[in-house]
Amino acid sequence: MANISIWNGSSTFAAGQTPFGFYDADTSFTSEADKVAKFCAIRLGYPLMDVELNSGSFYACFEEAVTTYGNEVYQAQAVQNYLSLEGGSTSTVLNEAVITPSLQNMIRISAGYGTEAGVGGSITKHTGSIAVNANQQDYDLNQWAIDEGIQGRIEIRKVFYEAPPAIMRYFDPYAGTGTGIQSLMDAFDFGSFSPGVNFLLMPASYDILKTQAIEFNDQIRKSGYSFEIVNNTLKLFPVPKSAGYIWFEYYEANDKQALDDSANTPGGVGGSISNISNVPYENPSYATINPIGRQWIYKYALALAKELLAYVRGKYTTVPVPGSEATLNQQDLLADARSEKEALITNLRDILEKTSKVSQLERKSQEAGFLQSVLKEVPMVIYVG
Image 1 (cartoon, rainbow, N blue to C red):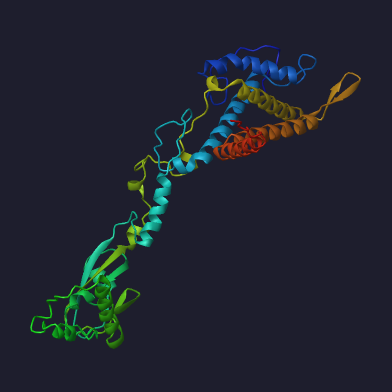
Image 2 (image 1 turned 90 degrees about the vertical axis):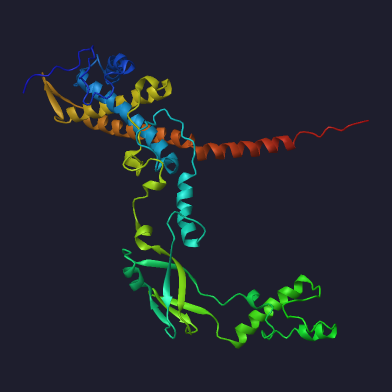
């Protein structure tokens, strides 16, 4: 194995010295790479003791720290705004975008309820009709769908099979409503006229009561118009006495079960956000990260370097020296590095949680409540005229 030099106190960064090269073209990153390497080396004990890492090790830790920071920040943004982002285009990078809350997905979700409630929705509702034969009570709508060339099952939503409206028999003298209108017309010598002509001015309630009387008469004295559907077999009540047609509305099951909802998503086919993995966030631009974020990155890079150094020193627990042997601090370094990394991640996630929309709205609500409490303690001005 070739001898690999360890950190000698200085370095000169050049493109290609990081594992992935995510930020090799970022001048802010390249200008700070050597400073971060020096910072980490000094914090690990150099020059009082050797640090068994080289400049490439520090560059790798620096690159990972920046990437981790961006991952945490953008992951929080994606989770917070996902409902507004889902269905959007994947072609626009969102790193610097301010996401405006959208109700588009709420509308899409409510459209499903609208479909079932029969008050809209995004599924096409079809209409059809089936021939009714005299003295035939059962009709197979599954067979009707096959005959019509429909693929898959159909879901019947409404059948137009009702009794004739009462208003059609409003002037029928044989409706049996018991209103006695003919007797009243005879008393005024209007009996010789057609029953369809009424020369008496009656209140609107009379029309309503007469219509209701016709409906009650049919409901009590006649068979009610009804139907039932079991497995798309339509059974009519009463049994039809003459031929005709019955109309109905239905959904095609394939339409309701279709997974491709691209027609209702802004992103369109092949370019829409469908899950957290294709939300268009990229690695951050180091140049746009403020000093608060950079300070977190420096500390996380140091924790990574400490962890890496612990793995290097863990190969040997002791090193022979003239007249004795030295015990390496691998366990201490590893424990410190892991706890520091966990603390930094927890701190960053706590900050991101506190700056989320929900937390900010809660804070504003608390501020408004506190302000109201303070204003209540302000003395009322007494006006003396």
